[in-house]
Length: 128
Image (cartoon, rainbow, N blue to C red):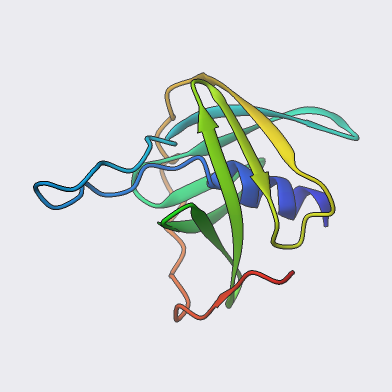
Protein backbone atom coordinates (compact mmCIF):
# COMPACT_ATOMS: atom_id res chain seq x y z
CA UNK A 1 0.00 0.00 0.00
CA UNK A 2 2.96 2.33 0.58
CA UNK A 3 3.98 2.25 -3.09
CA UNK A 4 0.44 3.18 -4.14
CA UNK A 5 0.54 6.15 -1.79
CA UNK A 6 4.01 7.18 -2.93
CA UNK A 7 2.94 6.96 -6.54
CA UNK A 8 -0.07 9.06 -5.73
CA UNK A 9 2.05 11.66 -4.09
CA UNK A 10 4.60 11.71 -6.78
CA UNK A 11 1.89 12.12 -9.31
CA UNK A 12 0.80 15.18 -7.49
CA UNK A 13 3.89 16.69 -8.90
CA UNK A 14 2.19 17.18 -12.22
CA UNK A 15 1.60 20.12 -14.47
CA UNK A 16 -1.89 21.49 -14.95
CA UNK A 17 -3.06 22.58 -18.39
CA UNK A 18 -2.59 26.30 -19.01
CA UNK A 19 -5.13 28.60 -17.33
CA UNK A 20 -7.40 31.06 -19.05
CA UNK A 21 -5.94 34.46 -19.82
CA UNK A 22 -5.78 36.65 -16.72
CA UNK A 23 -5.67 33.78 -14.23
CA UNK A 24 -2.62 32.74 -12.29
CA UNK A 25 -0.89 29.63 -13.56
CA UNK A 26 -0.90 26.49 -11.44
CA UNK A 27 2.52 25.32 -10.25
CA UNK A 28 4.48 23.15 -12.67
CA UNK A 29 4.71 19.78 -10.95
CA UNK A 30 5.91 17.82 -13.98
CA UNK A 31 9.28 16.20 -13.54
CA UNK A 32 11.21 13.29 -12.13
CA UNK A 33 10.99 13.24 -8.34
CA UNK A 34 12.77 11.26 -5.63
CA UNK A 35 10.95 10.07 -2.53
CA UNK A 36 12.27 8.13 0.47
CA UNK A 37 10.52 4.81 1.12
CA UNK A 38 11.14 2.05 3.67
CA UNK A 39 12.75 0.12 0.78
CA UNK A 40 15.06 3.02 -0.08
CA UNK A 41 14.77 6.02 -2.42
CA UNK A 42 12.39 5.66 -5.37
CA UNK A 43 11.68 7.81 -8.41
CA UNK A 44 8.30 9.06 -9.56
CA UNK A 45 7.77 10.62 -12.97
CA UNK A 46 4.91 13.11 -13.31
CA UNK A 47 4.09 14.05 -16.89
CA UNK A 48 2.14 16.96 -18.36
CA UNK A 49 -0.13 14.45 -20.20
CA UNK A 50 -1.83 13.67 -16.82
CA UNK A 51 0.08 10.42 -16.32
CA UNK A 52 2.49 9.52 -13.56
CA UNK A 53 4.68 6.46 -13.15
CA UNK A 54 6.21 4.75 -10.15
CA UNK A 55 8.12 1.62 -11.04
CA UNK A 56 5.97 -0.28 -13.54
CA UNK A 57 2.66 1.32 -12.45
CA UNK A 58 1.17 4.23 -14.40
CA UNK A 59 -1.79 6.26 -13.13
CA UNK A 60 -3.77 9.40 -14.02
CA UNK A 61 -3.85 12.66 -12.05
CA UNK A 62 -5.61 16.01 -12.02
CA UNK A 63 -5.25 19.15 -9.90
CA UNK A 64 -7.99 21.28 -8.41
CA UNK A 65 -6.80 24.25 -6.32
CA UNK A 66 -4.23 22.92 -3.80
CA UNK A 67 -5.32 19.29 -4.14
CA UNK A 68 -3.98 16.65 -6.49
CA UNK A 69 -6.31 13.78 -7.28
CA UNK A 70 -4.82 10.45 -8.35
CA UNK A 71 -6.86 7.67 -9.93
CA UNK A 72 -6.23 4.23 -8.46
CA UNK A 73 -8.33 1.84 -10.49
CA UNK A 74 -11.87 3.23 -10.39
CA UNK A 75 -11.27 5.59 -7.45
CA UNK A 76 -9.83 9.13 -7.22
CA UNK A 77 -7.94 9.94 -4.00
CA UNK A 78 -7.08 13.55 -3.14
CA UNK A 79 -3.90 14.83 -1.47
CA UNK A 80 -3.04 18.37 -0.42
CA UNK A 81 0.26 19.51 -1.87
CA UNK A 82 2.72 22.34 -1.43
CA UNK A 83 5.53 23.14 -3.86
CA UNK A 84 8.54 25.23 -2.82
CA UNK A 85 11.25 25.29 -5.46
CA UNK A 86 12.21 21.67 -6.09
CA UNK A 87 10.55 20.38 -2.90
CA UNK A 88 7.05 18.93 -3.01
CA UNK A 89 5.10 17.79 0.03
CA UNK A 90 1.88 15.72 0.06
CA UNK A 91 -0.47 15.33 2.99
CA UNK A 92 -4.01 14.21 3.75
CA UNK A 93 -5.86 11.60 1.74
CA UNK A 94 -4.83 8.16 2.97
CA UNK A 95 -1.48 9.36 4.36
CA UNK A 96 -0.74 9.08 8.07
CA UNK A 97 1.96 11.75 7.80
CA UNK A 98 3.22 14.11 5.07
CA UNK A 99 5.55 12.79 2.38
CA UNK A 100 8.33 14.94 0.88
CA UNK A 101 9.70 14.63 -2.66
CA UNK A 102 12.66 16.33 -4.33
CA UNK A 103 12.72 17.18 -8.03
CA UNK A 104 15.66 15.59 -9.83
CA UNK A 105 14.95 16.89 -13.32
CA UNK A 106 12.44 16.93 -16.16
CA UNK A 107 9.85 14.25 -16.76
CA UNK A 108 10.69 11.44 -19.17
CA UNK A 109 8.13 10.41 -21.80
CA UNK A 110 5.90 7.40 -21.20
CA UNK A 111 7.65 4.39 -22.69
CA UNK A 112 6.35 3.14 -26.03
CA UNK A 113 3.62 0.59 -25.47
CA UNK A 114 2.56 2.00 -22.07
CA UNK A 115 -0.90 3.45 -22.65
CA UNK A 116 -2.37 6.42 -20.82
CA UNK A 117 -4.77 4.77 -18.36
CA UNK A 118 -8.45 5.60 -18.79
CA UNK A 119 -9.71 8.15 -16.27
CA UNK A 120 -12.58 6.87 -14.11
CA UNK A 121 -15.59 9.11 -13.53
CA UNK A 122 -14.47 11.98 -11.31
CA UNK A 123 -15.84 11.31 -7.84
CA UNK A 124 -13.04 12.59 -5.60
CA UNK A 125 -12.29 11.14 -2.19
CA UNK A 126 -10.13 13.05 0.28
CA UNK A 127 -10.84 11.25 3.55
CA UNK A 128 -8.58 8.23 2.94
